[in-house]
Image (cartoon, rainbow, N blue to C red; front, side, top):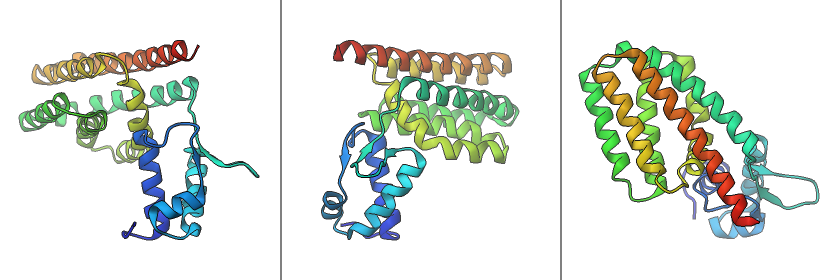
Length: 217
C-alpha cells in the first residue's frame, strides 16, 4: 500500500515509473479499479493521477475508452532526441571551463558504475548521472531546469536506445571519449565526442524500431 506524500502524487509517480521502466508496456490498459486494488487506495486519486499522466502525454485517455499507455512513434522519439542533443551540446560547451580534475574523476567513477550495471534500469540511471553531472556544472539555471523537466522522457527513450545488442558497451566507449577530451582540455574534441554520442544514440533508436518492425511482420 502506498503511504508517502498524497495518494494522488504517490499514485502518479508509481504509475509513471512503471511506464518508464517498461513494466507497463505501450498499449497496456490501465484500469482504475485494478490499480486501486493494487495500490490499496481509493479510485479517486488513481483517476486524478491518470488525468495528470494523460495531460503529460504518457497515456491516452479518450471518452468511453479505457486508459492505455501511449505507444510513442519513431517520429516523436526522434524529435525529442534532437531537442536533447541540442541541450547536451550546449551543456558540454558551457561546462567545459568549469570542469576540474576532481570533476573528471567523479565522471570516471560514474562511467564505471555505468559499465558494471546489472540491469537496463541501473544502466540508464548511471547514464543519466553522467549527463546530469555535466549540465549541472554549466551553471546555466535555465538549461538545468529544462533538462530536469526532460529527464523522465530521456530515461524512457534511453531504454529504447539501449535495447540493441552491444549498445551499452558503445555508450560506455562514447562516454570515455568525452572524458578523454576533457582530460586533454580539448573543447572542440569534447563537443565533437558529445555530438557523436547523440548521433549514435539516434541511430540506435532507429535500429531498435527497425528490428522491432521486422519481428512483428
